[in-house]
Amino acid sequence: MPKKMIHEFHEMKRKGEKIAYLTSYDYPTAQFAEAAGMDMILVGDSLGMCVYGYSGTIPVVMDQMIVHAEAVRRGAPNTFVVGDMPFLSYQSSLEKAVENAGRFLKEAGCDAIKLEGGRRIVPQIRAIVDSGIVVMGHIGLTPQSSGQLGGHKAQGRTLESAKALIEDALAIREAGIHMLLLEAIPPEVAAYITRTLDIPVLSIGAGVDCDGQLLIVSDLIGQFQAFTPKFVKKYCAVAETITNAMKAYVADVKSAKFPEPQHTYSMLKEERPKFDEWLKARGK
Image 1 (tube, one colour):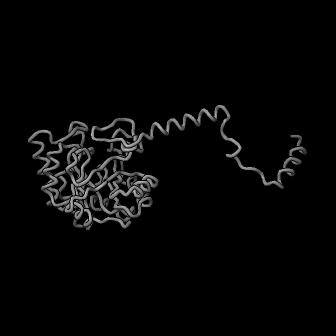
Image 2 (cartoon, helix red, strand yellow):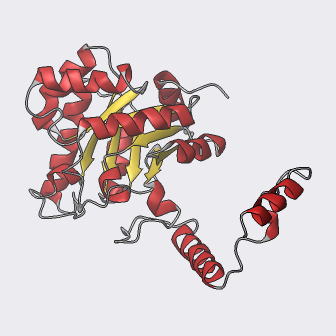
Image 3 (spheres, helix red, strand yellow):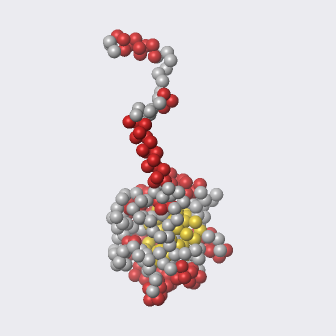
């Protein structure tokens, strides 16, 4: 199936077709996502927690993102891939923002980039869009600035904060974003933003009325164990499956049940007598 492009996602919104969006951080997972028919893949800075065991996304750097994005692109050559701009890869200057956004395309073959923030990053969005790069915005709970938000908390739950989110959405759309991700906001606020904007609006914890949904793959498959956000639905429990498999392996090794003959390699038939003679000569 050919890779969808940005105009096709806009057409899906127009037709009311939902967009399936998932994170991926490596080659095999990207293969699985493409085989499952995923519309878009996000190489998210959530890999900081899901892959590296950091307490948050702040420590993640561009070089890490590029390595993982390259692997995802190889695993899913026919899926639209979005690279996530890590903390301080776009905030310090417009030149740095464009340069780092461009790395996702030049070095990793991504189709778009995502960056967090509302009105305060309008200049960066304009600069990146003007350079010819497809941009996804991200507002609501923005993990890179969670310290200012008082932690990983839902946003837009009061009238004033809901109005601020709507103003952010309108401002960054005016700046040129091609898609928008809403994280952890009330569904009624998300529904209004989705109706108001003429671009695809994706949800991660923002309700069913958005144009599509995003989940963290490590949450979806039950791999990430530190915590489970309210908006997560676990579709399987690989952590339990993998742990049980490893326990069984440990038990088999300790009891000498593994490896069995079928797991080993035999000498060539004509060589075995020679080997036995050699051992005999050595007194073994």
